[in-house]
Image (cartoon, rainbow, N blue to C red; front, side):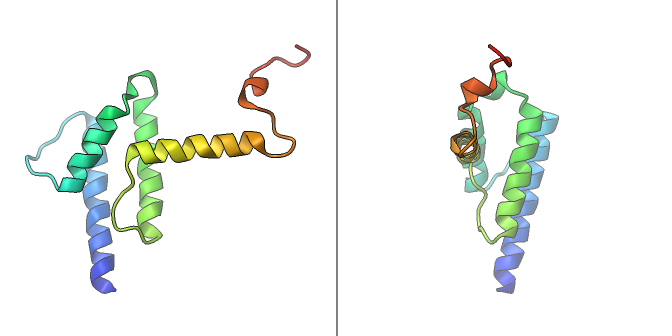
Length: 110
């Protein structure tokens, strides 16, 4: 069990370093773990140009930290995080008394 905790801590440390490098816009290393490369490719595929990239990466980082603290052995991909967020917002809008997203955007009395 202790080895698994140590491994999770190492993964979390590497993940946090990777996200910090992305937020700074530079990497100072030349070697990456396979899962880090997969995350980088996934982040690139998500095309974050039209969103607040920094804030989204910070939220993603917090979600992965919680995920690893809960027992996961590898970080989820950004695309998985975004899919979870989409499902969550759909679920909230479908709750009794909840309005669909489009209805929430309308002005009162419209």
